[in-house]
Length: 196
Image 1 (cartoon, helix red, strand yellow):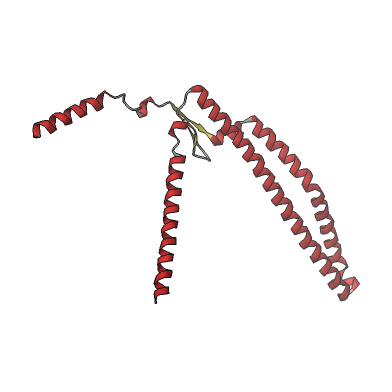
Image 2 (cartoon, rainbow, N blue to C red; image 1 turned 45 degrees about the horizontal axis):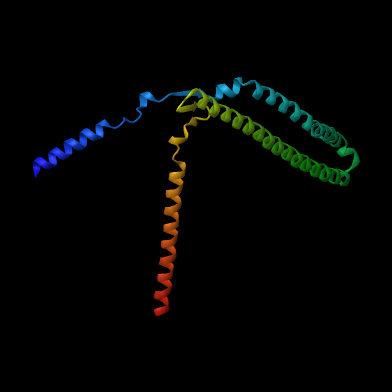
């Protein structure tokens, strides 16, 4: 019996060794890209960044004019406060305070709008670059293209190395089964309380 088992295990070993060997790490074609250098030196990014700076300055000019006018009025208020009396100073001071608050609100709204538009612009360029890298990787036969710099990620991998769907399926199945178990436990608890 022992001889039979040892012969079967040797035969199994020989058969398994004859299968085509799996791809080893050395046979993968991979590369990396320093993403911070790429974005820093990508001409489109530079051009779009320059256009965005000009647009930001243009959008900020009306607010800058309002701020300068307010600063001039505030300086005038300080010079005229004693001459015009306490009641005038209180009324004018309240008006200036309201205007200052309004200017602050406008400034915050403009900054938020510029941040949003800047982020959208950057995201669209980054997406474009990632798509290009993916196509480049396919054309050149790369298995992996890694990113270094600000965003250290895998920028391209062959589809057959993607296990996202498998993991997602298992996670969803586990979640559904735990959710189902929780409902079953709740029903069991309800029945126990009904019997009492």
